[in-house]
Image (tube, rainbow over all chains, first blue to last red; front, side, top):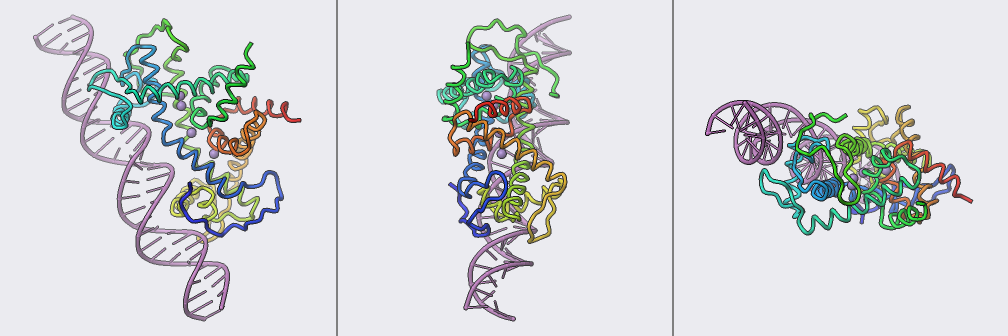
Length: 160
Length: 160
DNA sequence: CAAACAATTTAGCCTTGGCTAACAATCTTC
DNA sequence: GAAGATTGTTAGCCAAGGCTAAATTGTTTG
Ligand SMILES: [Mn+2]
Ligand SMILES: [Mn+2]
Ligand SMILES: [Mn+2]
Ligand SMILES: [Mn+2]
């Protein structure tokens, strides 16, 4: 919920003139709050998902691979791994491959599934593969469970 | 493009075992880069869009209204307005309503249009209004022009 | 087995986007 | 027109997520 006591400022009534009206303040506020919350976990999820993918496809997940695939410096990855460690999502011995904890595996699984639903939905919609991959990488973190379910249903019905 | 010289680490070949394979490193890197770029302009776009909406629906855009609708402190808004000013997107006299520059109006228009395409698309898909609004607020910044065009076409064909 | 190379870590810097607390200006109301 | 309420600004704090440069550890190879 939004802290910050509701201030007066805006007139309460909305005699609407043009196009779509503004949503009520509380609802509008919730939109932005939800986005801010998503952005807090977004990067974490991408790291965990990528580590899981590297483990499943390559057998190991090295910091250098992550840096390459994320197009980010190795220092950035190293710092992030410390954070993932503190969050109890990965285990890592210095200079060795990373592994996911129980909790990390759960998060990776959830993220991967959700990512795939969005990707396959975009393709079913008619978006080309390369564009679908790019858009899905960002969209995935902002799709609610409700919308996700609808996307999945759509995809199933639109594949021959 | 990605800086950081490509390192060796990963084996080049991919004899694929389970599910979807990992995309080639360069493509994968571009996914994350595009997301990072989107996140750089996202908040700016939301502010400018909101200021435009307040101007069109209320006739003025006060810092307090923005703070209320964003569910954020007035100090945060005040700081952000200074930035928007420096970016040449808004004009503001202290303690007065904000206005958009030419450039600001252009950005507001583009953002509003894109936001609406995504919102109407989600509703056409069958997502309830309140969920659609929340999801659209985040998704809008991660939808490419190509996908946007497809969404628009879909929406037109699916409204009675 | 010593060099050279590759991978990882650490230290220190920067920007963004939040916050609170204190102060300043404006508006409203009596 | 002063008091009180509302609005706006400023200062200073913090965490996240980037970066570079330098130091360290592992690995490969002549
Ligand atoms: Mn993902
Ligand atoms: Mn992602
Ligand atoms: Mn996002
Ligand atoms: Mn938005």
